[in-house]
Amino acid sequence: MRDEPTIIREPATFELITPDSPPVPVRVELSYSNRDPYAVQASFRTGQGSPVDWVFARDLLADGLLGPAGTGDVRVQPLAHDPGRIEVELASPSGHAVFTTCATTLAAFLDRTFEEVPPATEYSWLDFDDALADLLTARD
Image 1 (cartoon, rainbow, N blue to C red):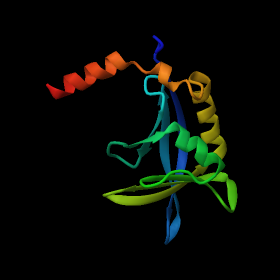
Image 2 (tube, rainbow, N blue to C red):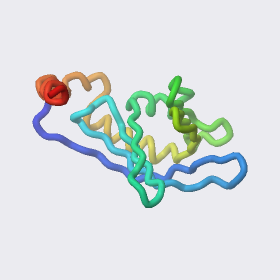
Image 3 (cartoon, helix red, strand yellow):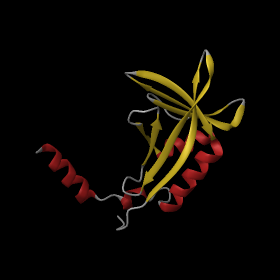
Image 4 (cartoon, rainbow, N blue to C red):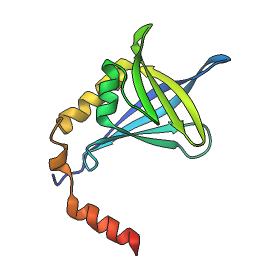
């Protein structure tokens, strides 16, 4: 665990793919904190309400740059006809959405996160005492 928290943020545009209309651009903020070294958060700005936040495994996004990755609620893969674009498929009890985004933007963001916390070192960044205190506080 390191003392200094670092948060990396990157704006991105994802395009919502719908069957009957052109893609709809959606502003997304990608963020990564060395306090939660395994995860990347994507905050989808969908209009005037609060953003819709999804948390992904950082490795899932990195693997999805190279080939199909993920099962269940989140799947990520390069587009077969355009490897410069990445498809992100999200499913939840309230719905299903398919987005595409720029592979270069996603890769650059992930590179910055791997510079901050190299792969296979995530465990050393976790603060177990703090996490336990949070769990115990939540039960009160």
